[in-house]
Length: 71
Image (cartoon, rainbow, N blue to C red):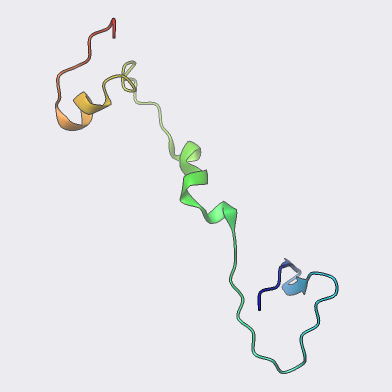
């Protein structure tokens, strides 16, 4: 069975109407979107000073020839 709820002052509060008998062992899985590294990507970005980085990323990473300016 899966139930949804939230935490409040250190206590898990389940959706209204959910009743679990006392003494039943439960397992809590925290679903925290803030912990998703993909959502933190913008905060990790830094200014490189390379004006054509998006266009020539393969050049800077792998040494491929630079793309022409008119492409």
